[in-house]
Length: 411
Image (spheres, rainbow, N blue to C red):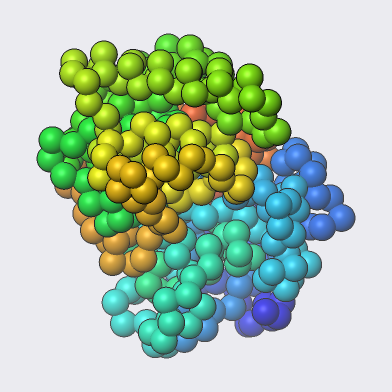
């Protein structure tokens, strides 16, 4: 991928807090930029710069960003770990951000379904060869043109209608985590009415949507949390019950493990299973386990799933090397299902549930443009829960549409 060239645009640069006339693309833009020489924690790696506005291809769209969501992949990009993502996409700088809401500002000459002025949210499934291959990269992580800038560049297939009743900041907060959870539970695990689902990280970015999707599907969610505050959030979203993981300190698998530690872990796993019985009011196991923690919880997940149950996993935040007693898998004919984000069709179906008010964003904290590095720093330090977004082009919270945004700028 080559660095974008500066086409003939007017004006040269638009000040923060202002918008150019609709459809007029400036030459340069303000952005929070990551460069390899400052890899490290977010307060170090995210720095403000003025960079060229992206040129767009025939099937691409330029979006004026109103708000952007915060995800952990921005932290990874800034750390340069576990992958130096700049080497993946080939530029010497990177703009993070894989969630956004905004307004279409320019369209490629092959784009037919979207026009300048459309209000949109974005999904981050960036196809390597649209129409030819389903191989994907994550926009704003594996591509350099993410949401923490005045303008972002995406493929037209990444656009979704912005739910009209949501503010810019609400609309920017849910895409990556919600569409991932929808893919996991609806498309891959295919949860059914009457089933019970154990959700690790029940108050996190994935968990808050997994709970709501269980409610939409007629399943019961048991949310695993780490505090009473998070338990109350999970219950308010419709969880049937909660379990505080801190009540089971020996549950996690931490290699290397001694025989005595393994014995304690299995005892904790059985006690955890009994807590599930108490919540359900009967001696039964959960049909589905919603996994993204990985190494620390996977042995418990396999054991806790019911006979013929499913463990659906989309990531492994505590480690990719998974160790478990496979007898619990084959003897009870359980299934492990891998899931990776969502395709455009899945994202569209998920977004319709938001448009209809059946699933709602759980925006727990909002940051300003100047606080974008701080938002990532707090995520890095595990000080956030739910979903988080930052204002970019929107001058203040609470705005829902372009016309009222322009009016607010002129107040």
